[in-house]
Image 1 (cartoon, one colour):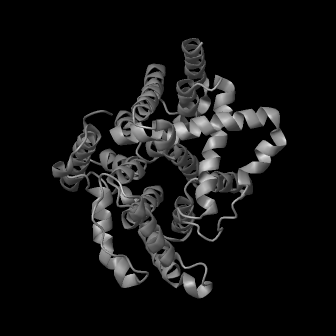
Image 2 (cartoon, rainbow, N blue to C red; image 1 turned 90 degrees about the vertical axis):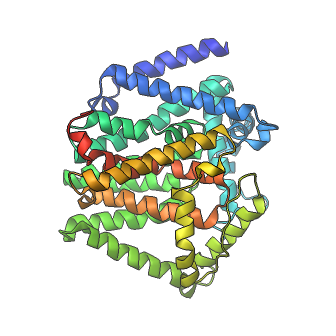
Length: 416
């Protein structure tokens, strides 16, 4: 029955993506759309298989934990729908609401887990609780994120669809981590769809209240999963709007918003003592350090002061943009990551000498740059586990690399 359902659903969703106007408007041929979707499904299966073969995978792997707990939630949905929906925001252990970034005694940590469990419970209802059939559902849902990003990039950099498609879909870590049933693919999809609506709303002068409400809902859906992404996205959208409305040099708006954001971050404790963002980051770092792990990167002590954050910034960016080094390889996955980083940095190096235009004159590219660097910096401050860094980093790689690929000289005569 598992194989039968897998084939039936796979054929159904392959047919559906070729009939969806939003996907068709990328300009990609049907065979390319199907190939990319099947590749994403394959990566999702590989993700599940890999984590199924670790000890105590039903507890140690978040993805499989979502699946097994999602099966219990599915039963609750069938037996008591009111309780199913009402319990999503339950806080039975009376955990603290103010610990927004904490992984200890925090309501918000449990909420992001419950969010994913509820999503998987719907998948289980449709699949009869079959993990690898669920992969098809999740792949279809999160396929719209890369598609939305591709359509934005194709609008900004027309005539380079093949190159943009490769940069969007085929970065190995991005493909792997966003295809597995976890939070990463969902976060990227919601953010990309919000950016798509905002970009074309501004371009077509259709940024009315209905579209803004939809954008707000997409961003709000990110909050239970990755609240810090929302804290970076909101000022990013504000800077984007200001840049298009008031500034010929778009970077000035983003620079001003960045300065204001940094100021508010370090003065938040004066607004209210319980909204002390620097101390929240320091405590979050300590939480992650207590988790331990096999591949721990050294971290300087972080204090809740501007000088300490400034001093630790180079190390934080090194961890998220340059690790693992070749000398740190202790598994095949890390080897792939090291090779991937080497190639990406080689592309950036070549771009410095062969760029054809400045991609950062576009507000949307500055938006993605601001979001990516802010969150990579935050990850570097907090997370010492190399494996976690590799996963958290993956969703930002297309945002940073695709504009570089699109404005490099080689794109003038290859892969148009």
